[in-house]
Image (cartoon, rainbow, N blue to C red; front, side, top):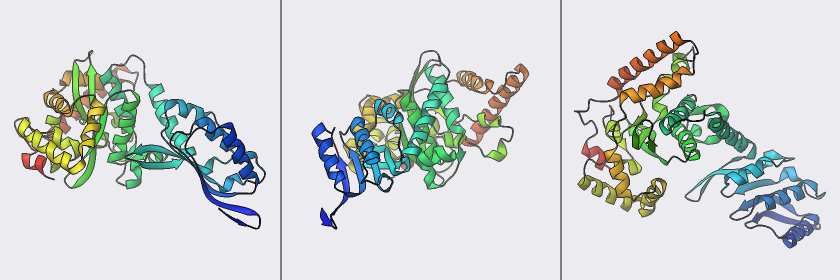
Length: 375
């Protein structure tokens, strides 16, 4: 801290715990002396009440130019904190930033204004979901919501602020949206990378238990593979026709046509037998550390061996069940009975036609053991 022309120069401030009354008074005294602040960070255990108090001081103290100070909320925000932040008004909201995702001590930051748009999209999507849906029905509803985003290979569309504001997503972006929605519904899930014909892609594993439809297992979802371009759905109805990557088994994924290489824990879980599984898990742990396996265990609340066994034993959902659930999704597109019947027939024919193009027959194992064992 230096003094020049009776003005104290301070590059930034940081708060990491709830502020006491004495600390607030000390802050007022310091700010009243004409301190020049570039940035303020709120992190670790600081509470929203303390953030609000600092915000008010910056807005009302005469010696402080609030619009020239960048503020960063760099801590995990739970639902209660979100609600408190939503109730706050900001004179200069464009100077406030917040970490919307924190993983491996890496912070994804956006403006508070964009953060509120993200939060509102997720909340409204969940709020609009019909009541009484079974687990599979709920997941298919959310899958449809994610499919409505436009596809792009642009890397920026793997970030929530750009995805929500522009309505565009890349492969990772689709799976990020889907994973966040499933998490909000307390459905265990994890997104993993894979490549197909040299192109990087992502897929989401989700554990489903649905007594109504007799579903119990870990299934894969990739909305980006069921998304089509605007030129193909000019009437707005065909957008709901693709479900071939909705709730598929790892066995079915292994028969995906093309040069496919699973990444991350996906490679481990796709092992064809115990020997291969142990070999892949050992290589995975050596490369990534045991903490990565523990994350998978924490998500699915099972030891990694049991997660593998659940994936291995997960059965295909029979087509009749799938078509009934998918048909309910397209029924919302029309109230006319004849139109519904046409839509349902189109959906089923489209599904069967795409199956032939996308996946090899069960008797053929497209994904070789060499693919699974490759680094």
